[in-house]
Amino acid sequence: MSNRVIALACIAVLGLAGCTTPPSTDRTSPTEPTERPSAPSPKDRDKGAVLAALRRLDLCALLDKAMAATPQFPPDAEPTAHQPFQCRLDGMAHPVTAAAVTMIHDTRLSLPVRAIGGAKAYVDQGTSTCDVFLPVSFELAIQFSQMPQGQPNDETCRVVTTLATASAAALADPTAVQIEPRWDACSVLRDALGSEADEAKLVGNTFDDCTDFSHQPIPASISFADDFISTGQPRTETIGGKQVRIYAQDGSCDIYWRQGPFSSKYATEPDYQVLAITPDCDRSKALAESLMTVLGTAPPADVAPQRPLLYTPDEPDSPYPGACAYVDVSDPKRCKPYAEVPVPADPAKIPAAALADADVLCAVAVDAVATYFGTRLRPVAVSDAGTDCYFVEPERQIHLGFTIDGGPPRRDPGDRQASVAGHPGYVAADASQHEYRLSTSSKLDGHGTVTLAVTTGPVNSRSPLPTGTDKKTKAVLADILRTYFS
Image (tube, rainbow, N blue to C red; front, side):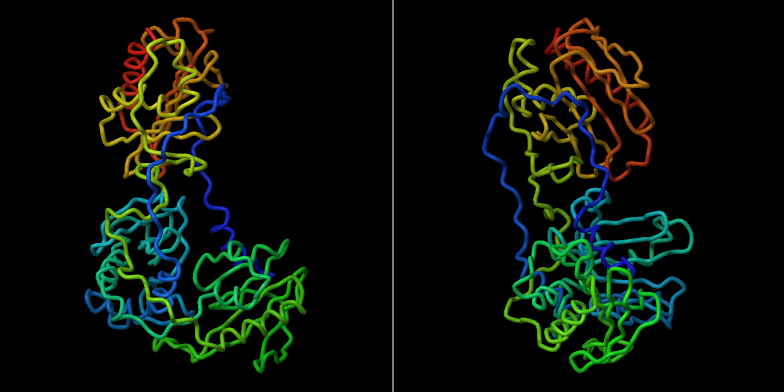
């Protein structure tokens, strides 16, 4: 069995790795964190309205309209639909695809934001592909993708960026590129499973695939598959009045059939291919018949589609308040924008106060960080396994983590000895990170540690820190230590 459908959905369930590790491992707080009213979190768009809008969106009509607005495309370039929620611009050396996809928070965090066609967009110039995402909710987006010739950069990605820009402008009036609503994969699977369905565990990487993760170890899944991804010799049967191809494999059973009608005028066939997978053929046959029944009916059309569909460049498309949308931590739900609080006058009381309240940490560092790194870095307080203060920016190019712990500075393998403003400790440094752990006293075996970690942000995690970062880091620490611990 091919695990392509399941693997794609796993990405949406598990998210992307690479969250920042807190700068210190001594995170036990002697008291409970101070509770204050949380900053209001942005509200997501109505899920039903967004779904209704995407079910009506003809991505091929959108690409057609975008090409008409940018007539430098080859005369043979032609949008073609092989799946309901994906369109491919053929007739080019390097085809462009447009698709309705899931876009998790970690993906948004790692990509630069641009204003494209009056809308918010995320641009990914990876190692081999150019991708532009236009978010439509906190979890969904329209993706434009191309594998260009040569290294992806602004020039080689110009075609996909141009198409995405024209498409964003066209989506100011989505009614011009809409068709009759059609079923998305997760809605079909939910209705086919009936009372067995757990909507929280129905996950699709795109609108053309969905997996039910409540069934383990091999979940049930559906895909509006563009090609055959199974192996071996199939047998042919009739299910629900349709001829199907059954691939019985080790631990799974894949069933393919053609489902019609395909409503887009850009479709190359009058119907489209569907794939159902479960661990055994009896279950797969039952699921396929249920899916055929659902697909044979019209999807619900009683919800008004989301308008406007795209976000404006400054509109929040994350559930996290303020600058918490830019922080790279394991659980952004534990984050809140900094609220000004006093710092204890007695240096001996600061570590305990900081362990109890992350805002105290931010209060200790906020002036020094602003002086040397600039006010664009905004403080956020995180109370997770202990407390931390992070300084982040919308561009997510640089990321500062600050904390104060009890006990002497920790020394890790490879650390160098360091001293700032008469306070000894250790530093770990490489091209993308400088982390200082310094004693709050003039002795290395003191009763407190100040830690400042400066790293490249999630958007440019592979790049080196700017020249002069280490000097700024030591200047911040010197100000903090002289002000609060001298």
